[in-house]
Image 1 (spheres, each protein chain N blue to C red):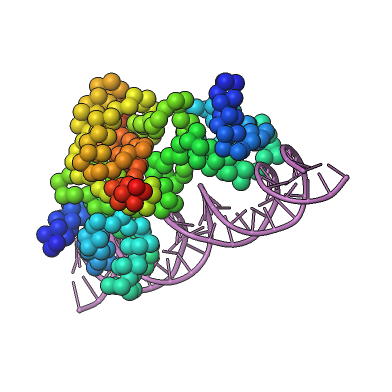
Image 2: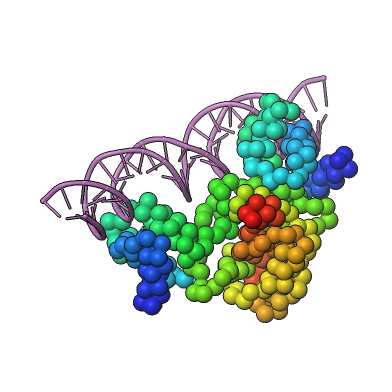
Length: 148
Length: 148
DNA sequence: CTTTGTATGATAATCAAAAACATTATAACC
DNA sequence: GGTTATAATGTTTTTGATTATCATACAAAG
């Protein structure tokens, strides 16, 4: 945990930013809720428990900043809200998601399944891929068994 | 063109909806701008040229309806707006997009590149895939040559 | 200590999308 | 045809997430 904060601090400093107390609290909340996909509002409420003086705008600014630095990925599952997801350390690419259309559960997939597909895109369409995002819609295991 | 409208009409009727004049004009605009990725506001403005009495809410409602019927796909490229994209006839799946990070151009890919990946997901994660969306971020051919 | 730039918090502004609601078609029935 | 129920529309208002503004606090550098 502290390691990861340390590395995020270094990433910020590498880009001439500081890890202020507000930013650190925000990062901690993100680390503690790594499995979830929190909206800015979600993050704000959790941060507020630890640091009540913080303003909503600061949380938005921090999330934006961390996204620019590729520490966070900003995702959108189609509800009207942006959600934020910590990028795994060392991951070049966005990880993928399985979104259940029944219960709304979101599962993550770490594997990079797209290497071959990326090659096809680069060759056939002359497009230099820097990142990708892939989401599957469907029905999760739990909801499948409930239906039977 | 008329064929496709006819089939959309049938799809609507199959679900107990009517192809009203407003809906038809909206569909025509979508067909005429198939290559673009129009926002609701874009569609509204274009529809208004042909049918000035129409209200914005009707366009929103129509786009929502067509999305539910899987005639349209609602996509989000990260700007704050939803965009709408006609699903190709007979296509089971959403088609893919290449988004250029330099100039913002969006290219479409029709091929279904994910059959193998889908099998992996279904087997390894016990997740029944009904649809997917895949977007590549990168640099398009034009912008690559400009840089040299 | 003073200056300069950066970060913050409170608040207001923006802007897409949804909701409300009254009105107008459309269809079904007698 | 007239009548009623239902669906669809258009106008307007509201919501709700995100951004912008701006005065203040802070920190680094001289």
